[in-house]
Length: 204
Image (cartoon, rainbow, N blue to C red; front, side):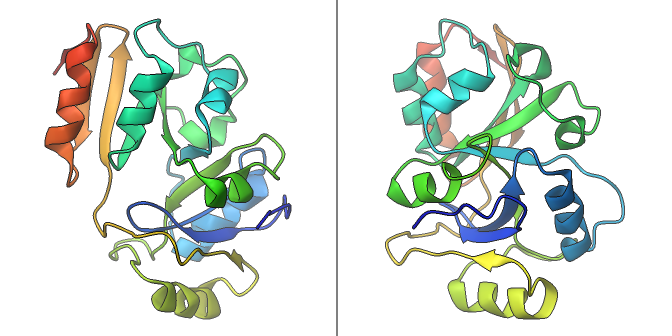
């Protein structure tokens, strides 16, 4: 599976819930997603990568954040907030919506490489698949119904190999290289905390 529809909205499963997204460079995709989800105000979205190397192409990370640490962290149903000032590439302003940080996810494996790597920028903007104020969608049947009702022009991609946890991700934000703020606690929060024991950063 390789997605190359650069200007199209994508619907796909993740490790937690179903998501909706599009090419990182497409403001059109961002606007379409807000319309589909019936979001009245512009909200930040996360960036989804399919490998650690692509994260490093976009961000200059502290030495303490090793590839092994990121592989462990992102394997625990997580989202990581990074200061905008760490970005090596320009992050489109509509992704962060004026915030001083941007959230990223990294989901590895053949399915996500096929989803992401064929797109310009080798990353997608991503958010949960649901109408604003409603619970995220957890299964393929409901995702297909959502597409038919609210996003008929979107491309839906799926993998029978993926098992979704059904819980929102833990969100952790680096305030700087030495301080970390917990924004949201997910199902595997206690395991996530253990990954920070190897870092010198202080968890707030």
